[in-house]
Length: 439
Image 1: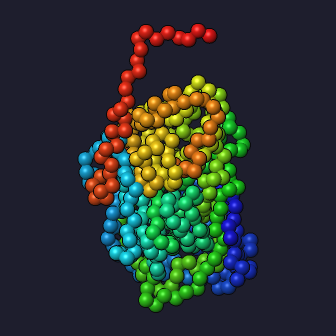
Image 2: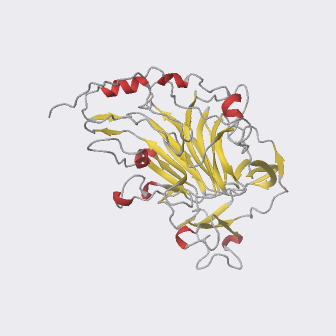
C-alpha cells in the first residue's frame, strides 16, 4: 500500500488499529491505544512553512529506549577524502563485484562501499557516492543515517525496504529516498547491487520547471510513500540499530523492533519513484539541449541555480534534431559528473560502460563521445530514431569537486585503466580549403 504525491501532508494508520491517530492535536496527554507520540524533524523548527519538514509518529515504544551507542567497524564506508592523492583523470569502473552468498554472507550495511565524495557531515555540507553489493537480508538490525539523505538506485535485484513509516518494494528502474534520521532495514532476494547518492545538509526536491510550465519531468503524483505498518515484536537476543554519525558507524542494542509505528502524519517521509514515469523534454528542432532537462530530483545549495547534487537520467526517447550531432557533445564542466548504468548500452559509449559499473568526470576534466560514436553519428542519416531504447543511464552531478577513495582507486580492483583509450582514435578532420555549401 502506498500514498501518492511528493512532499504532501500525509496521514496514515495501520488498519489493525483504527483511530490510532490523535484527533485535533499532536501530543495528547494519553495517546490512543496507549501509544507514545514522537516527532521526527527534518528541518529547523523555524524554517519557512514551504521548507518545514516534520512527521509525528505514534509508536508502541519510543526510539529513545536503547542501550548506549558504541563504535563499530565502518568497512569500506568512509568520509576520509584524503586517503589518496587527487586524480583529475577520466575514471571508469567495471561492474562492481557482488560477493557470493556461498562464500560470505553480506547484508546491505556490510556491503556499503564509498567511491567518492566531498565536504563534511559535521558542517552539513557535502555529498558521498556509494555502491552497495550484498547477498543476504538484514536480520534484527536496521540502519539510521544521522548525516544526510540516501537516494538509492537499485541496479540488480529488488529490495524490500522496511521503514518506520511502512514498507516499500523497490526494483531496478525505480529509486527511493530515505531521508535523514529515518530507520530502515533492507531485505534482498539474491545477489543485489545498486548505487547511492548521499547528501548532507539539504533534502531532495523537484526541480523548478520555469518556461516548461506546470507539468513535465518527474510529476509529483508519481511519487509513492509507504502506508503505516507496524510489528509489535520483542527481540530478547537484541536488536541492533546502526547509526551513521559524522562519517562513522555506531551501534546500540534494544530488545524490540524499531518498526513499531502504528500511525503517523506529516510531510517528512521516505518515498519511491519509477523512472519509466519520467516525462522527457527534448529538442525537436536542432542542436543538443543541456542534460539538466533530464533532472529528476535536486538538492539545492545556497547559491541560486547551483546544486549540491542533481539526480539526472537518460531515458528512452525520440531523437529528431535536424543538422545536428545528436549524442552528447564534448564538454568540460564546472560540476563533477558520476555516471552509472542500470541496464542497456549508453548511447555515447556503447562499449566498456557496463551495467553495475560507473564513471567519474571530475571538475573541468574533458569528456564526451568515444571515437566510434563520433564517426558513426557524424555521417548518420538524420531521421527520427528511438534513443536509449532498453537503456537507463543516470548521473549524479554535483558542484563539489569530488575526491575518490582508496577503495575506489585501488582496493575494489574494478578501475578500468584503459578508459582513456576510447578517445585515442579521434583524428583531425580539419580542411583549410573548406567552403560552405551553396544553398
